[in-house]
Length: 69
Image 1: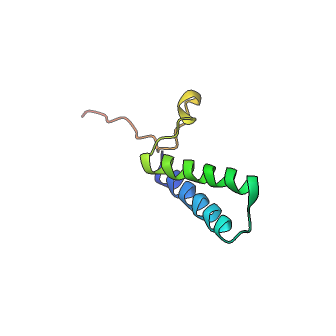
Image 2: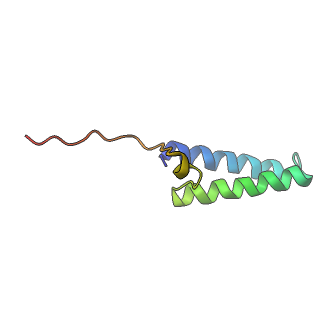
Image 3: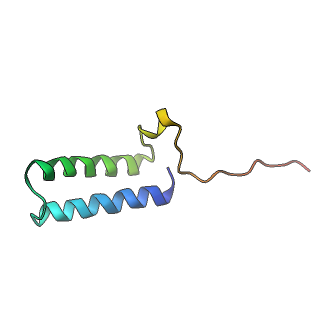
């Protein structure tokens, strides 16, 4: 997972947390979004998204192979 991907996930989680705290989102939708925000935080801290693996998605930059001289 790239640092940009992790940063976006943290930002989304922060926004959802603030919206929930300020009662802009509430009820069942608020709880679902709060759980999703927690998952975003967890996956950004461990730098691994379990949904990326089965689909072969990688947001890391591809490093060119080293050539020997």
